[in-house]
Length: 72
View (spheres, rainbow, N blue to C red):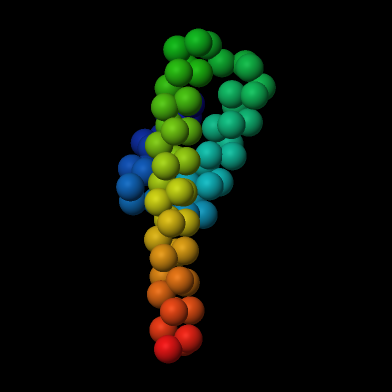
């Protein structure tokens, strides 16, 4: 993983979390990191995926509310 300070997942936008998740998955799929590094990457990927799901769930809820309000 890079030496730069990682952004707290909870502060990330959907797009930032998605993009980093794609990068992490690519690193894991390449298989060029140690087991220890792979475990750290996997943990980061889990957190990023959860953030994406959280953001998508919130967007879905807002859309459902707007649609329901328009149907009244």
